[in-house]
Amino acid sequence: MKRSDEPVYWLLFGAGGVMTAVLLPILVLITGILVPMGIISPEKLSYERVHAFATSWWGALILLATIALPICHAMHRIYHGLHDVGVHTTRLHHYVCYGFAFLVSAAALTLLVQMF
Image (cartoon, rainbow, N blue to C red; front, top):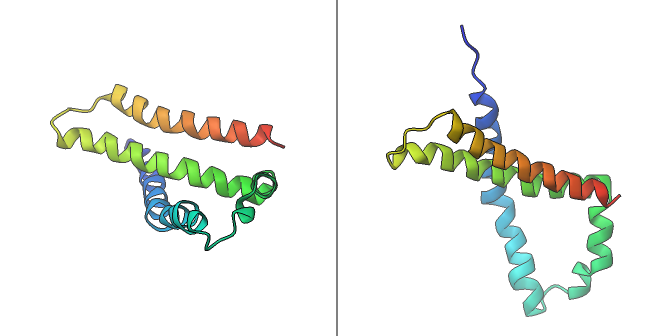
């Protein structure tokens, strides 16, 4: 019996979907509406505070999850959406889609590690 790696991708897809549906609208609300309208003080998002958050271990993990999980979700959706538009997916499509998600996640991790 051949084992499938598909459950790992579905796990990342589900986690990225939750992140995209629940947490990213909150980030857009805060940074795109509440701060420009003056409801939240712009000093709360000053460079020093955001840098301190990003260079803490838990802040780096949150930022990594905020970047990596939605890209995994999007690439999984694109990979399976190719079939819906009539493209018969091959291993090349598999490697391109999930490889891109891995490269973006690895780049984000590298940048966050370099900040320490």
